[in-house]
Length: 154
Image 1 (cartoon, rainbow, N blue to C red):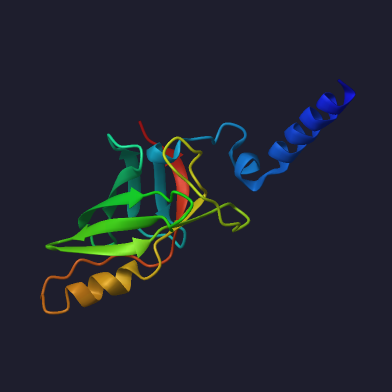
Image 2: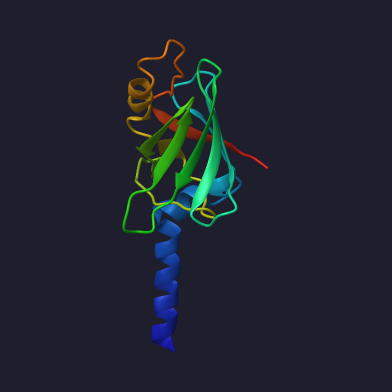
């Protein structure tokens, strides 16, 4: 009985100090598929996530700095592969790794139902969008940089 109580206490202590749990305790808890994000460095760009009818992905709408609306789907990792985002840029589809971080910039895994990470990054998405559209005169920009959690959508 004593050993079971020690294991239970250690489990509670470990869980309460975990970066994933610690970042989401309190009023700012929001499921990942409802997260609302803004560029960390400012500007009018925004990212609103919403649930898909699938257990492996989350959809989103990104408003770019120029006001273009882009749709994306984030496919979450199954533990063997990286999470990634499929992003519709005009008539082109691009793919970017999707990374999530805590306030302290600790990398975290994520999936639908998990607490929304404090930061999302899609490395190289802006460059991939530029290359895909290089022959077009009216290009859609994808901002580079970190997206910071700002709220929770419906």
